[in-house]
Image (tube, rainbow, N blue to C red):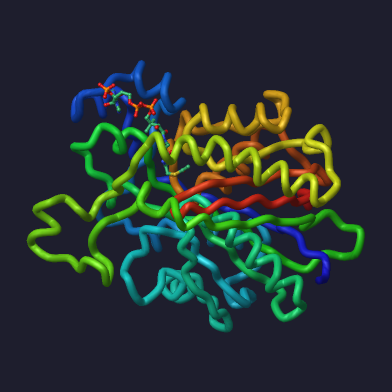
Length: 329
Ligand code: ACO
């Protein structure tokens, strides 16, 4: 496999902010409970006329602008999402058209909160194979469309957003992709799912009346799996690559719950300054948390060219994923 790098990053969050105090007016909760149990202060919510592809396009255009190229140079588009505009056509098709990526093919990748890291792994291999020169990996989710704002156990957790990274060939010796580890444990499927709307239980008046088109989760089961697996898969990847956790400049974990992140960091022996946390500003934006956290880490001067960065995530499925990259710009 040839050396590959991440050459650009773009993000988008909708301007409207939903605070914990706003939520406390909608369900029986409080700012104190949400902050203490999750680390979240506020999240961004898309206006009704904005869908996932709109946010994905904004993020993609920002990445293209940073790189100084047009959409026509893109070879493939991978949109990681659990909230596509439609079941079909794929969100990747909508993005391809909007950014003028005339020669690109692409597809949607469903791996929930691990989606973006699965997408990076896939993009790295498309470019690493030598068959693609520019692959755009986008994580975009409009979680507010599939959240029941009458359910206090889920509505406090999620927000909307999008982020895109461009993957390109790198010269030998240039910073780039180091390694990956991706897994599925399908026994965890029942713990986090949307009950209706697929081929198992198509949408009907009954499924709507029973509120089956929303995120349905056993929060404690997800929490326990995530705490264990985020640390373990990261430790396994570091061991496979022969890298000590002290060599990692920054762990950029999926932002689901500050307690999950801190447990994983503790398991890995990471110091607080090695761990990126921005969950307080965005909540869990599913496939978008990692690019959003990367953007903020760069803006805050926490990582720079040549630094070793660990992306790690756990999500519905259960899916889990870890990637090591040396940051290239
Ligand atoms: N406000 C106030 N009280 C609440 C709220 C709320 N928003 N939500 C739940 N409670 C109550 C519960 O009803 C329960 O009350 P009870 O004791 O009277 O029954 C009490 O708080 C404790 O509930 P727990 O479920 O034990 O709370 P816990 O500390 O586990 O936190 C949470 C719940 C935040 C959902 C946690 O389990 C969690 O984060 N799980 C992971 C879920 C997740 O991140 N999913 C995202 C997708 S997957 C991923 O990204 C990894």
